[in-house]
Amino acid sequence: MKFGVVRFPGSCDEVDALMACRRFAEAELLWHGDTDLQGIDAVVVPGGFSYGDYLRVGAIARFSPLMESVIEFAHEGGPVLGICNGFQVLCEAGLLPGALLPNDSLRFVCRQVDVIVENTDTPFTRACAAGDRLSIPVKHTTGRYYAPEGTLPDEQVVLRYAPGHNPNGSMDDVAGVCNEGGNVMGLMPHPEHAVDLLTGSADGGRLFESLAMVPA
Amino acid sequence: MRARVLIRPKAGILDPQGQAVERALPALGFEGVANVHVGRLIELDVEDASEVPQMCERLLANPLIEDYEVVELKEEAA
Image (cartoon, each protein chain N blue to C red):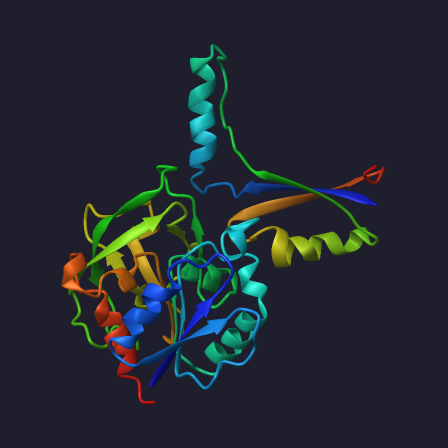
């Protein structure tokens, strides 16, 4: 089992994501300008400010050469996890429903939040039990999830902010969603920053652990 | 041909930028201001203006959350 972690110009969490993946399996970086996915089994699109987030968050990164390969990989059923800016990129790419809007506070938020696991029937949450409460940090300015009415079936809500923990005004406290096939997931919290008790929580590791359970 | 693209948050989606501006104006003594919304303006020279709506659909706007309006201008940029 090998993870590929995408590096765009402007990514800033790709090394933490790489280290988080390596706790559970092999992992290597994938460069945005390449098109070869190097035979990896799962893709992580990390956080940061890909292509400067010019125009709109994730709007330009979505057209990078590597993303065309990631989109094809996803359409073939390959697991793809987008974290924060990676979530925004996957929404822009049309791999996930909805979009991310500026936080209702218009402020950058950076704090530990609790999220509830709503759906364990995904490659990203199979190591969790339904209703598990995970403590994971958020750090973003554009994290208010919105999907037009009727475009997000309830079973595609994978994670919800615990009551009182919604940091950005996301609709229905949605923190993480998956596509219809269940093989693409995006979330605003940063599980790669919560893989060691030294930094407060190891709960984020559960997502990478789940992915590593995918047969190679 | 010079084109101007006006991009606005879709009606019904919370627009905290517009709300912040709306609250700021009365503080400066401007009364009677309502329904403030903040969007983006993109201007571009194009050979074929008929392609601009496709540019909006694919890149310039996100039709899930934004409405766009294309205005054709007479003069190209100097």
